[in-house]
Image (cartoon, rainbow, N blue to C red):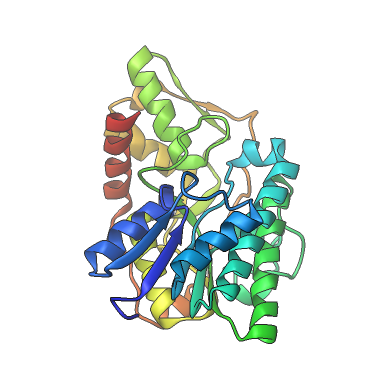
Length: 306
């Protein structure tokens, strides 16, 4: 990409968007337009079109979304579907109208069928069955965006990449013990226990397995995909961790290993999710942040900003 091109980043104050803005600035891109909720309500069609027309970006990173964890998704199926479909539809159409050269969007591993047709999960299997019930509405909203991008290539020649993400974590995440994802909800639980002297109650039994990627690596991979790949692309570290390993690492970081209590009456979510990273490997991408470094930086950031 041209270092002088206008690059618009939606969700610019969130987990992935903020990391992308920082990375792009550090890489010498001089015309980055960060778009957060304060700048434009992406559920407002007219406002979204006007913002894109005013800035006329050459490239768009679309990282804005209404995001929940397992319980949040189960409790807010309708709102999750409506807001995400509305946001995504507005952003893709605004990109087309503004003459964007390429849009790279954040999808989710939740789009894959459950049970999976094969493991590791391959990009060609996204529409091969229904998603896991706990993430049904969010997954279908993200699938709809993929279908829209495919249609826009057919009708308008729009170039795009669709990032199918593993579990991402880092600063500026949603640190919510009820509605948040695994790592940020755990970080908050450990911090709360350290402050109150209470226990760290963890959902499930720790056996569920996930591929986790620190958000600084996610920003690096987003830029690499924008520059070198099109279509749906799985991202991941290539290492699958048991949830128990993440909990144990946070126990070491916090010094609260002796306060961990497992609540096996609560759901684990999907038991196993791993991704075929062949497309990503074709451009030689590798993570540079070990998971404990990412967890430590996330822990420290939350401690300063809670």
